[in-house]
Every structure is written in C-alpha cells, then in structure tokens.
Image (cartoon, rainbow, N blue to C red; front, top):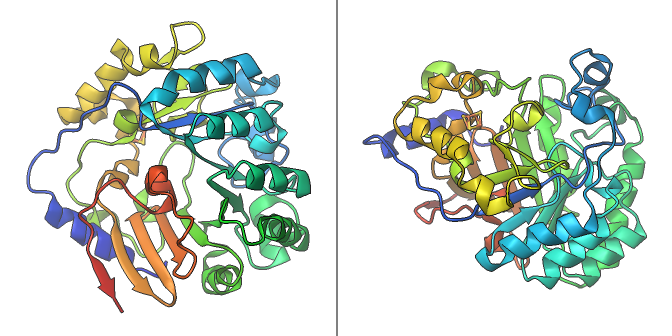
Length: 369
Ligand code: SF4
C-alpha cells in the first residue's frame, strides 16, 4: 500500500466525535445489478466462483443454473430508478460481458442519462464491446488484472495469458482514440502473493490507462482489516454505522436484493425481491431494509450475523487524498485506493461517487507532496 494505511485510520478517528446516524434517500444512490448470475472464470481468490466454491457442497443452488435478466426486466429497473439519477454498476458477483442483456443495459443506461460503470475480467473485451462503450459514451470500465507477471496472474486468476489481457485493454484504448469516454481503469486485489508487484503494476498501467484501483483482499464474508498489509486491528477507530444499506441497492439476476456488496457472497441472505415485491423502491424502503438501518444507527450491528464480523463499515468515513508521483490518490478506506493519473482526469465523472475515487463527501483536504 503506497499510502500508509494507518494514516487514514488516525484521520477518521479524529473525525469521529459522536455517534453518527445515517439517512437513506427515497431511492438508492447506487444501483448494482447482476445482469446474469454466472462467470466465465474461476479465479482462485473469488468469493463466488472459485474452483473450490464451485466444487463445494456449499455452492449455492442460485449459482448452479444460469439466470439472465430479460430486456424487459432491465428496462423496468432503469425506468423506475432513472428519475432519481442513481449511478449504476452492471455487475455484482458475475462477469457482465457474458450477460445476454449486456449491450441492451449499456444502451439503456446512457439513453436514460445515467452514469454507468462495470468491472470485467477482460477476457471478452474485444473490438465490438469497445465500440459499444465508445459509441454510447459509457462512463467507465475497470478490468481486473491483479498481477504484473504471468506467474502471479496464474495464482490470482488461474490463467497465464497476461499478454492477451493487455492486448484487450489496448483494443479498448485504441477504439477510444481521442474520445473522452469510457474512463478506463485497471484493478488489483492485493494479497500476500502479489503485494510486492504493486509498484511495478502502477508504473506499467500509469502510462496506459486513466486510473488504477487497489483493493484489499476480502475473505469469505469477513472483511478483516488486519489482513491488509500495514494495518493492525488496534488501529481501528470506534465503530460507526455502515453506509452500504443507506446508499447502495444490490440486485441479483433473479431480482433478489441482498443487504450489501459483502453479503452478495451468500445468495441466501435476502431482504426482498424487486420482481415479486413491487420494484426497486418497494424493496429499498421495506421493513427488512429499515430494520437493518435502524440497528446500525443505534449501534446494534452485532445483532446482524453478517455485520458482526465485518470491518467494511470503515468505508463510511471521508476519504484521504494526496497528489504524488503523477497520481491524484484517493483512499476511501484501507480497502480501496484509487490512483487517478493526474493528466487524465477529463473523463472523471463525479456522478460515479467513490467508485471512481470521487467520493460523496466534499470535506477532504489535499496534500501536495
Ligand atoms: S457492515 Fe459489512 S456486512 Fe454489514 S452492511 Fe456493512 S458491508 Fe454489509
């Protein structure tokens, strides 16, 4: 981690003077949609579709049969949320480029004037997909690569074809040419076997793309901050409510809504179904969601088994920011660091919230180094 993780924990501890209470709007600010429930890879560190997970008796029945949202379902969701101008992410626990409605969803998001993003493993990123994204002025795409050597890629993603992934990113950049959109980023999930490659990874991609995002590894429904290099549990500030259920709705391909991005790992954790219970707004404001919010706002998160063991609430704090080595570096929490290339900020869309390192809080201070 290039920014010392302890710094942000000290910063957020200072910000925390009283029990924080969060509010949710009438509709979510961020809509995350799983257009299909499947993936074309089995990355060893994937919490959803690794070989181990697929082979396990614990592999959820939800994942065993492919589900694809229909165009009608996708259109209904976007038509309902569009007046509230949320930003949209076209994936959850799936690979969006294999979804049957991917092209339709991209076009619909932009037709309705929404800001959109998605994360892909890059295997199917080709000229047709690139042309679609450029022609629609789609806002942002991130490609997961996680390594700077083929050997490490094999450990992270179970494949060795690093050159192929680089070529696919180059195709997108080439099709984009002098166009502004989409904003292109590369992601890296840091683990004990690839952590040492981060400096070279940043240098390599800094010359090519608009931003690099480094994510802390999350193990099986238990985001544990002490697993992030450089962070100790005793550095954590006093716990506050988690912003996830106040800001994001996470919709599965079958319409089920899971409380947050972390519980998306277990399809059995459900708070409602938008296809059966009246749509996005109905589930977003239902008793189950409101109960979770109430428990968080009254400091009773331990009553939720999935929240009890989760450190991801640390993302609720304001982000730390600095300008260094040609990057505008933004760190919403020890789990996420955005390295935005300084001279490629023209396509930085503030509507994409903190997933683009923009953040919804405006009280960050910039430190020039
Ligand atoms: S604390 Fe963790 S499990 Fe609970 S809502 Fe937040 S991210 Fe989800």
